[in-house]
Image (cartoon, rainbow, N blue to C red; front, side):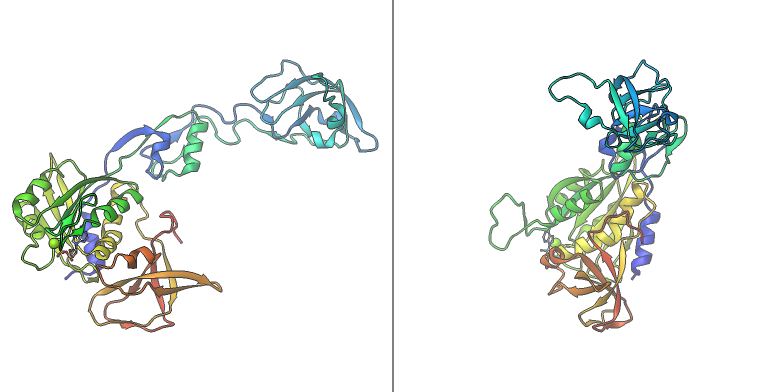
Length: 421
Ligand code: AMP
Ligand code: MG
């Protein structure tokens, strides 16, 4: 049986980065840039004011104090989006709003708070005040934002390989880019197998259970930025399974749940071995031992197929360990490591299974340390154990287990994926 690392390596070796697509910038959130982004404009385009105030010549303000203000003649007003055609000449000032271009002649801006402007304004008329008293000296360049201080024309602003976050979307918008070339999101076909399964909008007959795996797995696929293609339930017979597998032919990856254990009707692995190529079956991990990995025939390509275990908690843990890194690689991401911390475990956990255990746990930070306690019963079908958990505690194989107070590694389930500490 393969170790977790060996199994993951085989999966990663068998998947490639997908091709590219050009999408509206907002849709690219979480995708990876497929080319350098270079601006053909300068941002901001012109020197502009960082304050509401007066554009002045610094020399005209020298010696100004509250008691002995400098009085300047106001010759114009310029608002954001406008351009003043006037020039600030000795003894004059132009009223200026934040973001408005600095008029010629001015070398600094004095904010309203350092002038008599509020008193100067006559609220009952729209008249601009004719003169302003300046109470402080300005330094050359004061409160001026320089052209190109954010983005320089012709320079690479975002590098190929960058994972796009809201800041990158904003930056592209500031350059006037409406679309961006990124690595495509994988389409992931999802099939649940089992004679006992019922669709969630149908009444459950006696002995049947609802198909929850399709939904938890589709949720994970979406969480990691991929596109779920839910193909529904395949019954535990060859004909039905083969028919459903055909519907997965366009996908970039196929995930099935169930039908990979030792039972009489567990035929997913047999059909994978017969019609496709089986790379491995079974991993030294708990939950999730009966994991099958191979490739099936698709349209003009072969599709990686992970046969996840049927148990509701097992299939989610298997996804986190084996599917998530593969999908991230296909999306062009480099950081495939799940955000991990060290925590002090508050339960004693035996491990005589000869497999690595990933127990579901609640992680809390107290007094500068992370603490992990199990969510309760860890049965592989108990989905509540996943719902209560924010981490997976790793109990090493061959360790015999861990004692309360020991330090353990924890995969943080809900931490931002780009966290890399
Ligand atoms: P299997 O590996 O097919 O034997 O399934 C193992 C266990 O997981 C059985 O108890 C199944 O009823 C359960 N199971 C399989 N598929 C699903 C599913 N889609 N939703 C919920 N439980 C499932
Ligand atoms: Mg089954």
